[in-house]
Image (cartoon, rainbow, N blue to C red; front, side, top):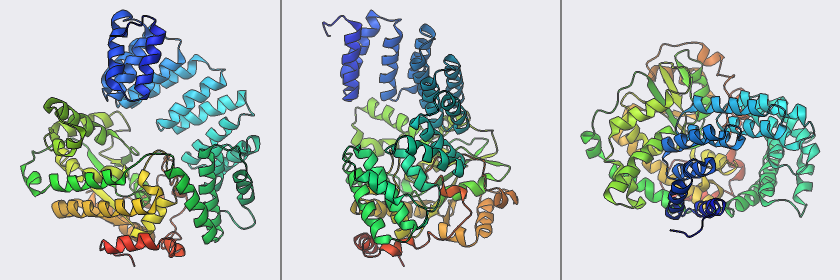
Length: 529
């Protein structure tokens, strides 16, 4: 128990503990604050932050709702309420909260920008676009707002508008990071029409933030590749990846060991012993696999069907799986290293029910819905145990093309294995071993689709997928490609282009640079040529 009595200082200390991930100390201060100041909205907000860190999303939402009732005019509280609602799977409530927040300060460009950014994070790109547009009318020389509009137009597939806003942002501030990246990403540059000189001028500056430098190197690599300067492209890419990798701590061994543990725990005995799962009224379609293997392309084709909608990249399955497993760990006094083993003991029927309840708050309620989260490949056996009606579509691509496509992409807080070729190779080998295990257990319940086959004969492959979903054929699967659906994946710009084959075999331009990766995959017995 602390002797401090000033609530402001107590809150400051508690937030320092939270920043340091010292949850127990933060919880102790939270308990003291709650006892002394039970109706203080700042205290309730702090309690909500702790609940979020502890993955108690329902409690976090209740606490933030109480804080907003006590201080309805605080925009920051409204945004945190929306964050808690989104974390709790209440997507529609979160968007409604953001609409209320936008009405609070309709003539404040900073407030509109803050709400718009939150809308974009929740996938509400049209709302974000409208809020940023209103803010830009109030503050037309804001480089940040122009960059924000460039980003949402890229997500929405308005690539010419995205480039125009990105150009304007760079004119206002040549070092604004995402605009530099968007400018390079939204179209294929040519020797006569590119941004190489301006990017190199930025790289020559001594005052740039390290994160901006990293984005510049990735942009430079992309533009050099577009014009066929492959050696220069890989040189820039290696520099960008090295800088990105140096910016965070990560052990690929942890993920390799985790995948091996999944293989050991989820064996044929588990499959025969598990219960019937939860049979819902709708069919979840999980599109999964390594990133950059054509999952967005497959999603777009299938979303053209009148009985299918896409919910985008959802976190619900892994979130509920983690929550159920942590309850077992806490009940049995086990540490996080036992997480995979403990997950065998969860109630899979309840897991399936919780998942379907969460996603029911999103979308229109079509008979089939797509959950396109690549990393769900980790949970194939668990998905089928929890949701026996689920369909699994595994997108694949030639291994070297896959790895190179992953290596050259600057992701947003995802795939930390992708910035070092040795780590990338080790992760990929472990992924292949895990998927081979799932195929051994579940066979034809998993539909494998190769990117190269979709490119070569889209109609044949899409018809095969529609048949796998037990749906009647509709020509709209080929004609629409769901072009009105916002895409926030790394391939948002490519997703708006016609199906093309130019990326098939692209890795061969870098045979010498990728030789160590090629050797590692070959030694693992993978077919590469």
